[in-house]
Image 1: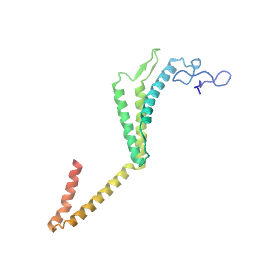
Image 2: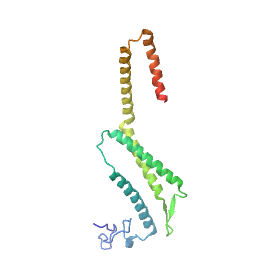
Image 3: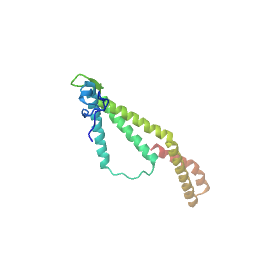
Image 4: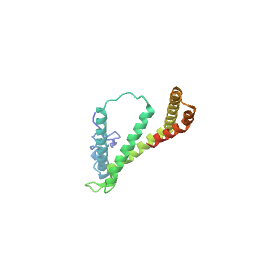
Length: 183
């Protein structure tokens, strides 16, 4: 099915003409206007970038999600990477607007993509904050630390340490764990 102009004809029915490329209306209903052409060009450029990303994603294989929170964290990291890459492109621009051949000035596509990337990154980060992800990660780390302590105690008991050596355990173990954090 071919796209159809979104405008309404004088008869009250929807216009049957096709819209301009990248646009929503035909040339008879404003598609020839410089601002409409500029918006259509921006839309086409954004669609091209999204199509390229979709093609890359379609090429990759997908497995089931084992940990939704870990996956959300990865998505947030990717969104931040896209935001940073977009920011670099915006910073490289000599102007944040472009002027078409018809003299219409519009926002550069890179700026619009950067704004979208900022919004998406903020949404992912907000979801992570609301999910209590960092608190859960901290609980897992504390649980792991508890297991390490249990294993160390079991090892020390099996070594039949002297009372002097056992007295050094509460001093040496925390020092060594802190040394690991620094590395």
